[in-house]
Length: 428
Ligand SMILES: Cc1cc2nc3c(=O)[nH]c(=O)nc-3n(C[C@H](O)[C@H](O)[C@H](O)COP(=O)(O)OP(=O)(O)OC[C@H]3O[C@@H](n4cnc5c(N)ncnc54)[C@H](O)[C@@H]3O)c2cc1C
Ligand code: SF4
Ligand code: SF4
Image (cartoon, rainbow, N blue to C red; front, side, top):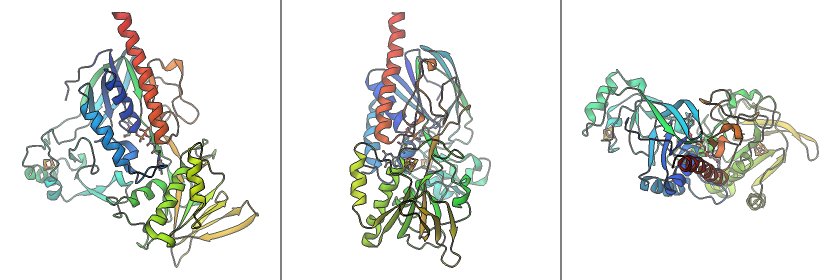
């Protein structure tokens, strides 16, 4: 593992989501040496947890496959998973990153045959499914995971299960003695692509996410549609497994609210419009969506998508910020309360399921960056001269959709290339 050759000509990319992968691939395809660090056991980021992409409604696995092909073809690109940067020192053309690598307990011999998982009994919440299901302690994070290599959860190390996993492996791929490693990686420029995380829905007390089972978040709803997801692709209610044919989408859940996230998360209107189409896909004419919104932010070419959704008689729009949610005792239905601002009528509407269009916040909180970097009030990285040779890419810079993340990441790769080229010019 410790054979990372890096110089001041290397571009270090932190975060292996769609933005980090894009920046790394673009820079490598321009002939630069690149090290891509990802803290999870596989690359792909949150895009790999989506069922379909707006606006084209294609499957993310398709785009991911193309990116993986490009990534694997690049000899100049080194991917290190389970890696977190603890410090970046130096300046443009001369950075040193201290990187901590967590043990996977599974080496390169792994063929992803799955025999270890069959031998192990312990299960944990599956983080890929936002805890909606369990996964084995010996696991592949998801079907298309790259690298295609199992992971042994550190919580079973030292137990019988770890020994059972080792005994089951015919390829000598399980190494229970693996230790955490620390690397120093030199780089001329850094692309920071650590992405976003969903706002903690439990903090929005009036919506009862932590009290009512049939109030879920948009990221959880997305996982439910996946045939390999926690419900096998069924849209069912967590409380009783009943089909959720009448679904409410609550916009600005945690966003545009000074008690939570002050910013507009920019993609959650489009995410709900997309998810409203899932109901017709699942239930045909029986699928009904109601979108409770302040205003719909569908910009540029997304306006066409909005117009198409509005034309569907099974999707209703209620102009209102939902005040609070209660639960019907007998049915388990969430009941949404508020005032419809077109007509100023009070409503108390029961639905099968309520989906919170949850806000996006930076995955690295303000003050937790391992380097000096200028951030805005919401914690997203600003494009600022003071950042030197460190450039944000994608949703580390703002709440962005995939298209805009990819464009932004490509621009960041270019800025990073300019920095290392200047260094090479000055030295040569
Ligand atoms: C409900 C919902 C639905 C959506 N649907 C769509 C859609 O249909 N179409 C669309 O265009 N967009 C959609 N989006 C937006 C889309 O998810 C983002 O545009 C995309 O995830 C941005 O990619 P990214 O690489 O910038 O960030 P991420 O996907 O968050 O990737 C960041 C990566 O960095 C890693 N990382 C984090 N911290 C560290 C660290 N310290 N060190 C190393 N690695 C780290 C993470 O593990 C992750 O792999 C949706 C968003 C939501 C909330
Ligand atoms: S660790 Fe061994 S048993 Fe487990 S998937 Fe890999 S090769 Fe198969
Ligand atoms: S994108 Fe829509 S739902 Fe999301 S915060 Fe902005 S206005 Fe609210």
